[in-house]
Length: 446
Image (tube, rainbow, N blue to C red; front, side, top):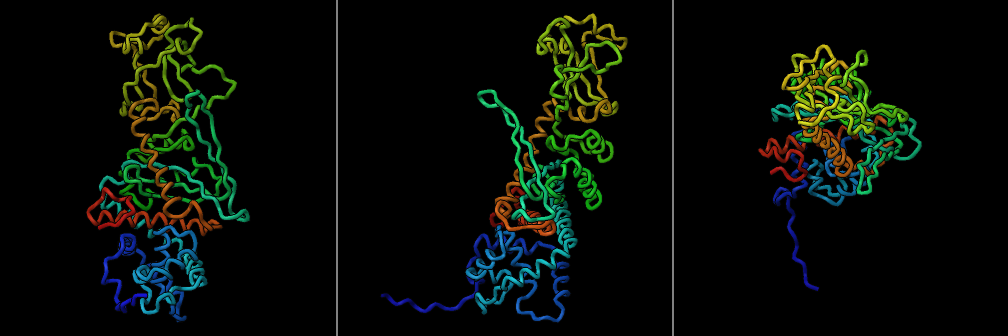
């Protein structure tokens, strides 16, 4: 067997750091964690300092950065990776013996549960840092609820939750609904729709309705980040947030245009699609359960698809607080067999332009929003709602929530808060490196 020459001892500083280690180093550099570390040091008091608090804390952040689902997984990585130990701050001369045993991590995590206010403060400080670096951060936001299953079935704080998904009709024309059930908690997450970075969050039992948590999260953003709140122009959400009162509050009190999908609240036994816009008088203008406005162009046609024609949407009149619609016959040149009935309305001044109908937002704030639900603008802006789904996917796949061992609401809140904090810290590292287009990239910020 050939002899292996004796290797010289060296420091990890003498070789180029791996991209993953560089990413961790950048996160630790920007993380505003001094208050948490000081609080942990004060709680240790005069006890032994075999495992420095700063190094233990840094290694916990490393576990979040690299998606370790358990303390034991993190300890195994520290035991084999000298480069990681040195970046975290452990004594390089002690080798694997420098890795703290599991009880040390258990005690530190237990103390962090009592310091959740500082963890949340670190998250909000990073939101402010991101907003200062990105002038357009927060202009468009999206919100959604995410399932967080608990480990096991003996969690007294957890509850059963259900999420309905509306399936798109396929080639056979079959659509429908699919329901996902889980036992645990729900993450209510508000993110920037362009940069896909978190702005606010809350963890609740899984049976908490999404619509009840929209306004508290928006109010928290207004309270903690007033300048960022003032930037928000559009807020998008799925049908789980469809509430007329909340939509009106978003626009009237917060200046946020709601881009929230509308549920059809009609009962299954109701056969008629259209109802009169003004039931107090005879008219030809109707609307349906999702806010579409149409004119009845043929009173004797039994087929609703042929009897009604959708009015042309002409935009939102902010000074009037109303949506403007134009006669479909005049706008599109279709034949109208009901003109005489239309002209019976005393306020109708038809002319060559055709009849104009204005629908005030307060007619039904759930159906009629400043950006009309059935307009091209709504469809374009609403596509960005998928940004929050991609953030949810990263939480699962990158930060280890797809397979975890977390049980209890306090632990779940802490773990989620650390993951979202690391997500923001990674973005700040990229932006400070002059590469804001990679703000959500998980590779090295060089």
